[in-house]
Length: 234
Image 1 (cartoon, helix red, strand yellow):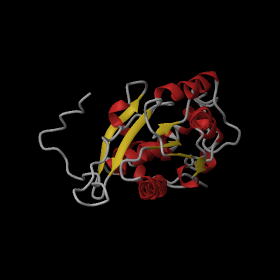
Image 2 (cartoon, helix red, strand yellow):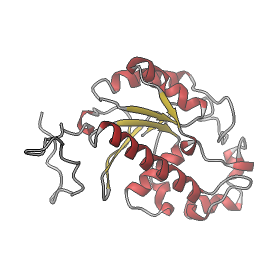
Image 3 (cartoon, one colour):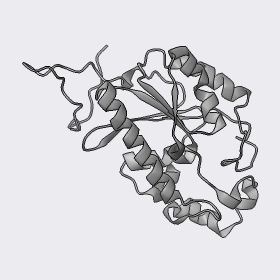
């Protein structure tokens, strides 16, 4: 899960939300270009993006390099902040709702917009549906990439970690960062959070082993390793 690169609104002190034509700034464009080399060793089966311009721009260099088309998924779009969109954060911090967003986000509904509980519901449903579709087409060991927004990715990570949405503000997801979740039949495994440049080679599942005497391969295990993972060889 990739948060879009730094946008022209990041650092402006304004809540951009779904404001149209918010694209990448110079740093964001550099992050998008760097993504090509950073993911060079990762086999990607598919790219899925929020419809917002900054997400489409972030994936553009990678899509060209890999000759992959991008599936646009509206359920991964930015939070609809409603009447808060375009307002200064220092002003919004004085609103009574601000404290709820910080301490009890599951109850937060933005005036004229949507609630954060709905954001998590739509985003998690989208991720699980795309993961099931891509796994059915490419196999359980397929790796795919989605590009979305900070609060959206944080809500997906909270679900994957088994945390209540009210804890999702404890998760940090910076522009251009990568977070990695592996979904299995019974539970997700969280491999990375807010990775800003580390080696991602370890996220690639080992080649599937064939089932003896049968024309199929073993499914990804849903079992956790007792005592903790011993890491991958090589």
